[in-house]
Length: 131
Length: 131
Image 1 (spheres, each protein chain N blue to C red):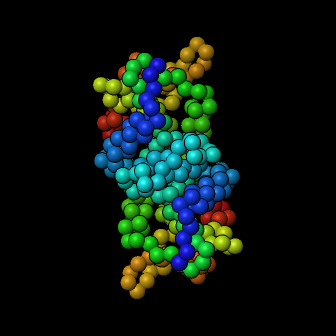
Image 2 (cartoon, rainbow over the protein chains, first blue to last red):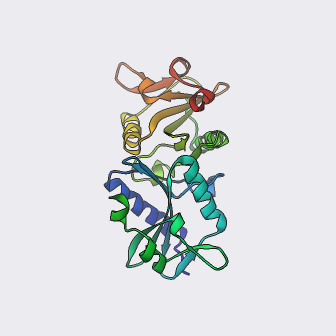
Image 3 (cartoon, chains in turn blue, green):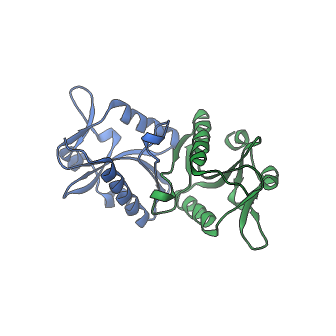
């Protein structure tokens, strides 16, 4: 499992934020867990009668396992807010996939994960998500 | 016109964020204009079928004039997102008032402003806003 640095994470979140703006969705990037006492997703996207709460991950390869509280908090936030709960995952040379929290992989130890296989089978590409 | 420091601003935004959470609204604080290439409000609050985009200001006294683009961007963001557009203003010893953008004061030079007078006449207190 290879995860991006925090600075790269910020860059990728901004990249995604711009993509949504270009499709006429208003988007806000969270001040981040480091400075937030309460859970919030990386991005919150609104437009065309929809709201999407999105947790962003970028991977070079392999898969990403989530801490249980991460997905629990994403679901709770989304339910309270009235938003759809998504994980956006970016693979080098493959770009972004969007996997609904209910479509994440679940390991034998009952941990949520996302991998290229999960993303390709269950995820949407950006144009499918916003169409 | 006396405006808070950036650090105090952050503290007050968090104070407000906690108030909304206590009322069961999910709330996200923006990464901020300094690190955002596109406009976003200080807070975005969702729950009970409502979404509120909120620009926060704290004043010791007097009034606060807004740059035209600030209110224009708040309105544009809110319209795209599907949110109500509000200014939250906190006066020392008086607490928070919430003024809808359409109820802000307008100066002779056509600039938007908020003052204690405007806040008391046109604004809502927190409990009125979320009831």
